[in-house]
Length: 155
Image 1 (cartoon, helix red, strand yellow):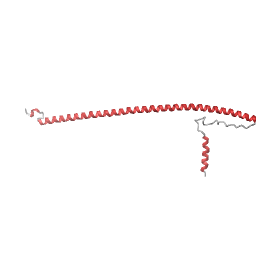
Image 2 (cartoon, rainbow, N blue to C red; image 1 turned 60 degrees about the vertical axis):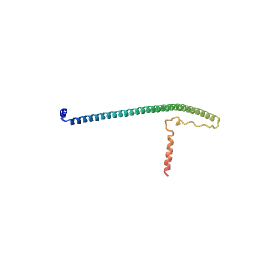
Image 3 (cartoon, rainbow, N blue to C red; image 1 turned 90 degrees about the vertical axis):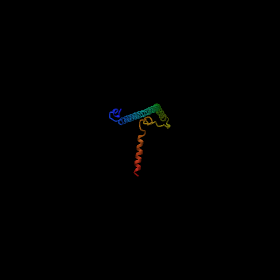
Image 4 (cartoon, rainbow, N blue to C red; image 1 turned 180 degrees about the vertical axis):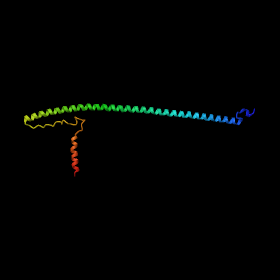
């Protein structure tokens, strides 16, 4: 048989070049397919690693939140206890103030009838800042300091 009858193009050299070209193209395609698979595998690994890191961060943040919540609850409990203690102390201070007023009244009566001077203690002022913690203590005390400072600046 002649080589021209085997090839539609009429040359056997063209056939071998075409086959080599097809094999080379198939090889490149297969190489590219393997490269894409490897790239996809690496991408999946990176995504999985990122997901694992995010899961760990979520767990860490949840633990931190639990600690912060426990601390906040502890502080809130301490606040409630201190408020209760302050309420008791304010009531006690009011009671002692009432007792002091009663004793002072008795001393005044004794002083008046006996003629002997009694050492009568001053009563607790009704505007005691300890009895009203929501008010700024001694707001009037700042005024003399400011007046003194202004007086000192004149010299």
